[in-house]
Image (cartoon, rainbow, N blue to C red; front, side, top):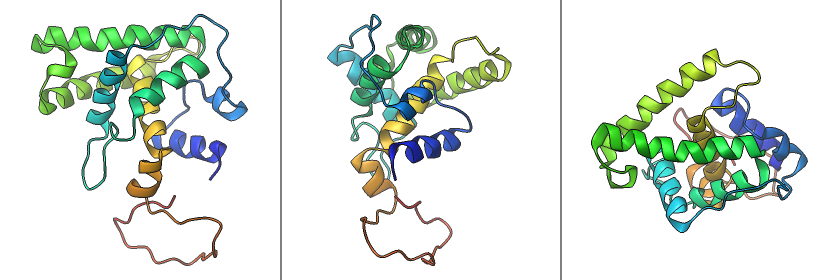
Length: 186
């Protein structure tokens, strides 16, 4: 699977287009605009958000795939300046919403509180996306979800442990057995 196919797969999985999707298809180049650097605390924070979205189950979660670090690279290198700004402000908004709702920072919440908070934000972003105009910026939480999915399912952990991995090149078998509930191929 090449990068274009991976992006298209993740995009279909999310039911729409990815923010910065053009950059993925043409190849990310270092952004010449002003990009805000991420601190190690920011990376840890994004890892916690991602791990709440894709927690460890029978397979490692998003934190194990280092999706927080992946997000920082993608935002700085592939997002336009206006989207970078939305993402950075969104990190603050998410934490402010956590403080307002639970009187605590997001990283200090228990797993159930994190889940409940992100469900509320997901509902908010769905409504926003449904009503947004063409020139409106994407919702920050949608960006976080998209980058989490892309980072996880294109990582070694996502490709080899979360999905069924078949090493290529290899023998093509167009009639592999499939049972309901099997993992997707990678």
